Image (tube, rainbow, N blue to C red; front, side, top):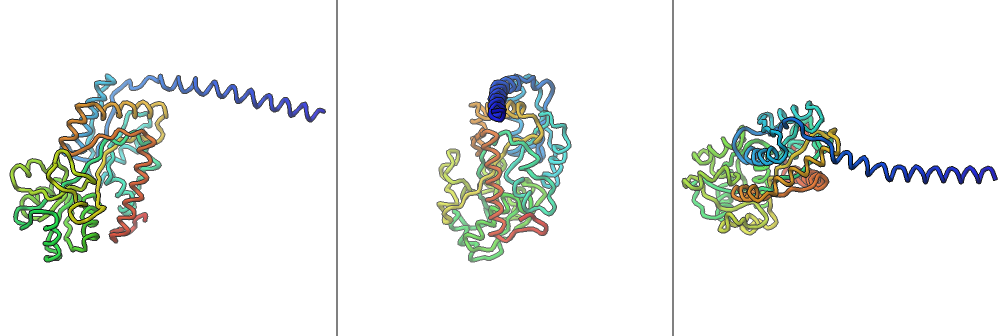
Length: 337
């Protein structure tokens, strides 16, 4: 009898504790949702120099958040070392939600391919939202005697190793994008790595390189001047802004798609309530009509995903690019795959 009574009291205690927790957690959640944030300026780190797609997108979001929150969101450009400089600032920042960072698809590749890359995106960062999805345009210098992507592949087959392409660095998205083309088409191309995408574009429009990848916003002036001729885009479907330019997939390489994307993260130790408020504000900013219109003109599509969705996207990108590095034999010495 004493044992039965003890069990009964124990069950009563468990039920009471469960009831107490069930009413306390929502109250805590409500208190967290009303947390006073932000109360001071916020820093938005980018791993690029001023100008270009990442910087333009960062400033568009920063301006929107500044207006929404009444606190200045300052874009802090920390270019160099394949993004490591910006990551270093992010890793050392106080985890209070006042330091954010723009990451891109290239950063997931760096974490796989760069020897001794010290920053694990999936562990040290709290994903806030994917901002955009961005296609590349494939172009050539006017001296190359082709008028379509199919003709470009035929020319490459007839002239192995004579078509040079410049990129912003080894194992960048544009580098791997060309390597996938070479792998799928069975052609030989020559790669030249520059210290950034802008110098690579300059070299191509000057005739030092013959072919290239670029974002639409970066190449637009050279398209207008006639120094760059478009033959394809890397998106899955044709872009409304370039309806006459076919995709690589419909031009001889079915299934080909290369996507660059930008997103915002913060330190993984930032409190959940602040992460949620940051994410909600960023989603509102990227989905505002004027920002969507501006991004579309540059070849970008606004996304505005949740932290959970963005986390899943980052992990899927790591798997995808890991396979690309293996398939194209571009694993670098000391890489993690």
